[in-house]
Length: 621
Image (tube, rainbow, N blue to C red; front, side, top):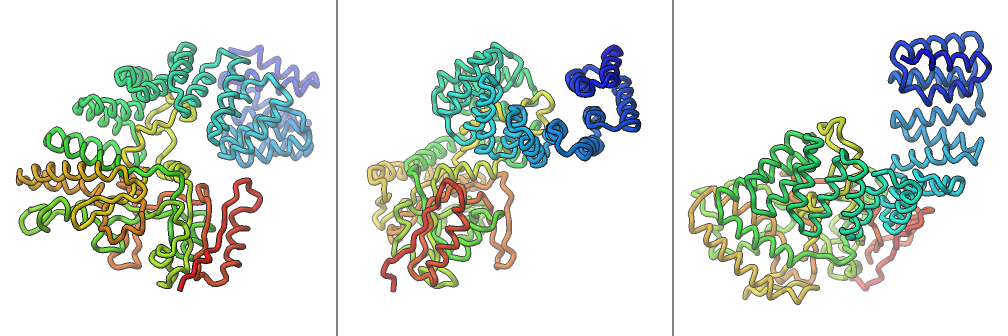
């Protein structure tokens, strides 16, 4: 019971010390029980009725907010501002309230008003920076937090939050400096070490990240995120057993920690313990409420059950992974050719995303057959009586290397507008940035609701690329097969012989599976081959030097173009604008200068990053 505390607040207010009464309330509000809060609520209403003051409205608003009566609380905060429209305190308190109810836009507006009244209050800048951070406006957050540090150089929370903002903008050196400064100012906060560990992990300094996570665990051994993060760093240095131990500890603390089950399942796969892996993926299904991760786990279980039943699939999977590795494209830029109207939509419609069509809907009806022609001696492919079972196929995006953004043949083939050649554009993207945009769009980045109250914010968690790659989010070179079964890989000549050997091994493995004459096994073979069959074309297309994004589409919403017959199936993956480097306008585009001006002012404006805009002058006839 805190009757004395209630009496003190009332006494302070009645002695004309309204501000002290407000401060005392906000400092000790969490210590009051229901009847004491109700007493203060009734008292604040009496004060307002007798002689309304800004502080009385604020006291009432804070009490209402503590009772989760947010609409009434907002009204009381607003009444305080109406009573005194230049009250820094009223704007500040309402801004804090808006942060608590996650109305960050309104919060930013209120702190801006408070700052206009007093631009030397570090608290207003700090909380506006916090609101900017939660609004994903990291540059503005950094500006505000820098101002806090100017006003109060020992404010360790600002160094930490600015470090987190730098993490989001991938300025890892700045992030490390800020986390280190926060630790220098206060070395008893476990999250500061955890954040620095995350920064170290993003620059592949895994031993340093392990040290920081271990220190975070020493300070707070009950935070499951610290064990989860340390497990990821152990995975990076191939210490699988210690990674499993840490995932296990995280699960002991939070038994419904879905991602820990999922990642522990992956580690058991690395140890060829498929049955243990299945158990973990099944536990993950119980914890997960996002379709993406649910479907990922379900697919993992299915694949592992198939491997347990058919041992011959292990060699097949290994051969396919070898081929993927040889065709992996990791250069910095990629270019996509498309029509002018599509370009306009992609660049100016805020909701528009780059789309990938399901492989069956690619323009060339012979797509995907070249690999099968190589692997099989006849066109029967998968003998199964008088019919074959449908197997879903991956979703494909077509690109070329960045340096081919102004290629005469590609203008002719792929930059059409209303079937007229060279009247489109080429869009050059920064590959890694585009991959990050895809991940941000299609992968839920919040903790599962089923993880419950034990789960801390996912901001204190490393994004583990081992758990989200699964061969999605990668670009591959297309290989071109000649009539004598040689392999040509433009831009990777040194890998051609290795690819031919890998294909020969795959061919032998396919023959062994087909010789078993098992219809179910043949269908599993077909599904696995579909993951790479669209990475091969005939050498008549070698001029393209094509790069392909191949995604299985698991857990991603499918959309249908009903106007076509049959309706096109596709997935929308991400906006291209954050990763756009350059636009080249085709040599036959009419009023090209006007289009260039339109794109320039639409895209560049006052932003620091400028998109290059070029007009092709190739002699197209």
